[in-house]
Length: 201
Ligand code: 5GP
Image 1 (cartoon, rainbow, N blue to C red):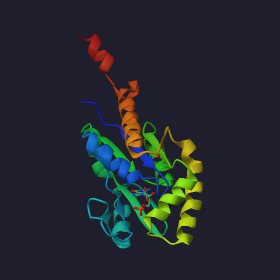
Image 2 (spheres, protein in one colour):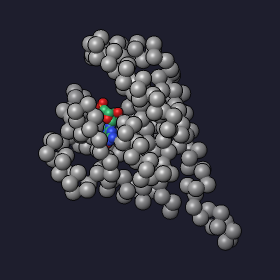
Image 3 (cartoon, rainbow, N blue to C red):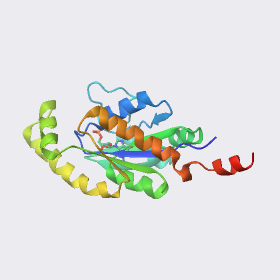
């Protein structure tokens, strides 16, 4: 059986990456979402082991020490990291693995897995991102301003990614993301032995 492909997804806050990935995971059952570990506090609506594996800083540092993480970073004062074993087991089992991680972690994964597929999710415009962040109603104007500034900085890194998916209309963004996965599955490099197999008939 072919190994699965590794798909790295990054996006500034408010671009709708969680919803896009939720829907993509429902539509394609060969996709596996890698649940990260984090030392940040659980938010309302989150579940341990589903949204993240919630850890104390000490527990997280233990995971680092034991080499349990594929990559990790400190982002706005909290640790975030990708548990190694689930990812490598799933890839071996032929599952296509999604890592939803920020730009620094993404760059580190690219170094370790040069063949991974890098997808960046974009807002249709900054005006729209501003509108969406206000609509959520969860942050003050100051925090929203900060988030928009961070988004601008993060966007500069989008040029290191293979694919750009713009989230103007959700269903189109989901379709685009699934199309990227499908195209990548057809990539010759991701189909080792197929030609030889046919010729051996
Ligand atoms: P949040 O706290 O909003 O859930 O996530 C903050 C940022 O951390 C997001 O950009 C998210 O993609 C990123 N992130 C989540 N898990 C990981 C991880 O395992 N590694 C890295 N490098 N970033 C992560």
